[in-house]
Length: 307
Figure 1: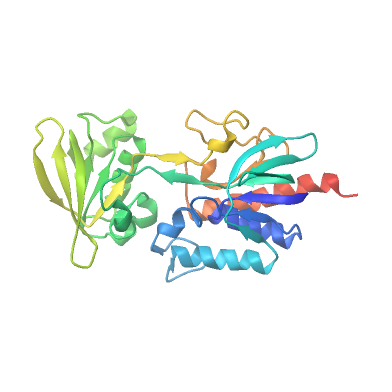
Figure 2: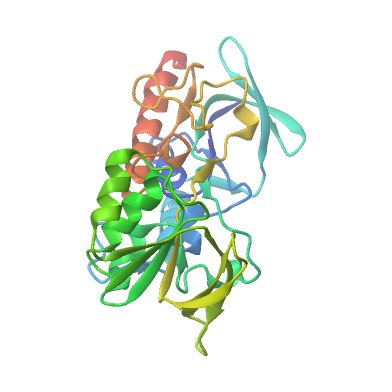
């Protein structure tokens, strides 16, 4: 019988692992399909407290992992496929084998939706990103573009005007899906130029492998053109990694886990932390805070089983 099983090794999962390990629970941490979470695809992280000169995303994740291991956390590349709540514990199906645990901390994160263009994976972190608040400050006084038409696209475009010389907002339709207040704010901003009825077809890198331009196609006329930008911000949403929990844990209409009090879910002993439950802030530091809270909530819950 495990005491704590943690799903995910982003900031939330690793912080939960540090706290659970220091509480002497020797947590089992499942790395899953995207070890390190979204930070593992980020180059420089400048907004995580304690690193005045910034730190590489993968390095920050490695530091957290070795910190958790130092206190006794165990790591496995296994994936959680299913779980069954029992009266006083949980049955977990991990890589086709069933095991038991008193608690489960779900920190499986959310995956950014991408466009699926040919050289997309290579360009992530080299002028292609899905987080304006993470990376906007790197693109001062240069042109950038945002892809999308919802609230997050309008919000990110507005945010980026603080840094970029020009922000192109590219949308495949002829009107924004964003709420009126967010759309009006973007449309009124002199630094934002809307490009309607258009989709990107290709990212164009310079000789150093950094973003130079994006190839655009007008969906009505079929006309193609190149738009010179230093960064492309894809803002077409995120997909929470919650497939194994459907029908068992309460979720909102987009599949994000719902927390009742603190990090508790609707099933006793199951806790949710980080981007898997947070579609508002989605920052490394807020995920880390939730990971800490989940481990503390699990510790309190486990006190019921101490004799």
